[in-house]
Image 1: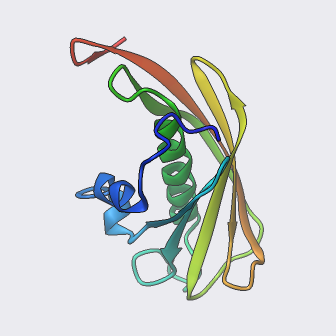
Image 2: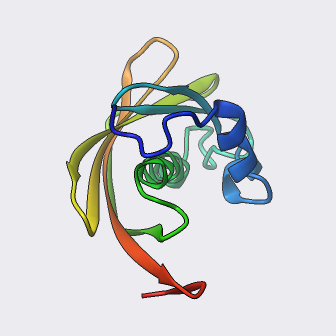
Length: 146
């Protein structure tokens, strides 16, 4: 298991989303595996573009959310914090409705950076988006970032 906090619950992760974009887009964490984190997001009026298709930015938001939270589960959050450095997203196909699911798996877990492979699928498990997220691990000192 890769997680620093091995006893965290999905309910606790939901609390992290309060008053954030994740809450606005109705992103929910659904599974914490030994080496992956999974979350879902509805395809609805909040997440579509004018043609009625899932917005690429919504897919990127879901990917960055699940990858960033996964990084936060690996570090000691009392001493460190994580921030996104770079994200890319290849939109393979789109969705018009239902739920999309993102699964983040680590490609690299270093002392100062994490790199995540994130795959987003639809309810039929068809690949919607492939994303890679690089996260910086920063040290906290007296409630400031260093």
